[in-house]
Length: 560
Image (tube, rainbow, N blue to C red):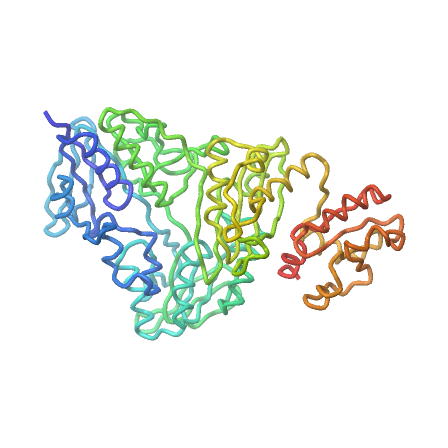
C-alpha cells in the first residue's frame, strides 16, 4: 500500500517537504492542506511587491522558469494533491485522521494519514490596541495584505505608521519611502532590530534611516488608534499622537500551535512545537517544521525560535527525507538573516553581545569599519563588522551593516559558526581575493584578527559609547590623541575638546615627548588601524594603559 503523507500548511516548509518526499518516494499519496488560496509563495518577497520591484504578486508564486505554482501545477508536475481553501480543524491521533473543513461550503471531511506534517507556520501578533480593527490597520503575512499596502500607495496616502522596528517594519519603510509616502516607525524598544543587532550597530542603521527622512520614535509605547468613519486617522502613543492614513502592525509573529496543542502534541520552552533532530514531535507519526516548530541553536545548544523562510525550506527538505525512510538529522541553526532598507544592508548571524552576556558568557567584541573592495579600486562601499566571541576564541556571532556587500561576509561567518569554529579559524581562512571584490586580508578575517589581538593582550580598546561617556565626565586623567593627518582633520572635523591632541602617526615616534606624562592616551584615527599601531608603540614608550577607540571617526561621527 502506498504511504499516506498529509501535510498541513502550504507556504514554505510544507511544499518543500512534499516535493522532497515525492522525489524520494514516487508512489506515496501526498496531500497538502492549506487554508489560504495561495500556495508555495515567497513571503519574503512581499515588501518588494509593495515597492513595485516585483510587478505582480503572482510573480512570487512562480517557478524560476515562470510557471505558476498552483494546485494544478503540483498535481500535474509532482503528483501532489493540494486542498486549498481547506482548514485542518482537528487531529485524531488514534485513528490517524485529520478533520478538514472546506472553507467554501463549510463541510468537513476526514483525511487519513500514515505520517502527518505540521507546517502551520506563524501568525502576526496583533496586540489588543484600542482601534486595531479599524480599516487601513493591517499586518503583513499574506499576498492579500501586501496588496492592501500597495493599494495605500496607489491611493495617494501621505503618511503611514509602522508599529515595530523589526525586519518587516524596516523593509516596508523602504517600500513606502521610495514611493514618496512619509514614513513613521514607532517601537517600544530603544533601538531598531533589537533581536538581531546590538545597540551600537543599531545606531548605524538608525542614522541611515533618519538621513533618508524616515521618522523614528523609539522607546515609545503605542496606546491605541483613532478613526473617523471606521478608518484609522491617528496613532496614539504614551508621548504624542500622529495623523496617519494607514498603519502596519509589525511587532513580531507567534507560532501557530493551536492545532498541535489541541491534539496533545508537546509544546517546547520557546512556545513553539518541540521536535527532535529528525523533526518528530512527541507523537512519532507526526512531524513539525518551519515557523510553528522549535529549532536548536548550534551556538548556544539551546532550543531557539527563529522563524525564517530559509530555515523553513531547509527543514522541509530534511522532513521529506525522514518521511520516506531516509533518516537525516538536522544539525540546527545559527540564525543567519539579511535585509536591506533604504540603501543600507543589514546582516546578522549567531548571537549578539547582549544575548551572550545574558547567557553569562565571557565575551570579547570588535567594531571594524572596512570597504567592500580594495581601497584603491573605484566604486567601493563601506561596511561595519561587529564580531562577538568568547575570550577562549570560540566565535559566537556577527553583525554587518552598511551600503557595501555584506552577504558573502555574513555567510563566511555563518559557515564558521555552523562548523563550531573559532576566531582563529575565521582569521586564517583562505578566502578569495581580487581588488574588485575585497582586500588582501578579507574584511571578516581582519575583524577576526582584531579579536585575536584583544584575546592575546596586544590590543586594548574602548568602544565609541565608552569614549563619549568618558568625554562627558570632564575627567582630566586622560587625553585624546588623534593620529590622522592635518588634511583629514580639515575634511572631517573632530571633537572640540581641550584634551584633544593631533599628532599624525607618521610623526608620533619623533614627537612622543610632547604627550602629557602620567595620563592615559585614548587614540583615534579614521577606522582604527593607525590608532592600534599608535597604541602598540605608546605602550612601549611609557603609556602602558594606552587604548585605541574602535572604529575611529568612521563610527564616532555617527555617535556624536
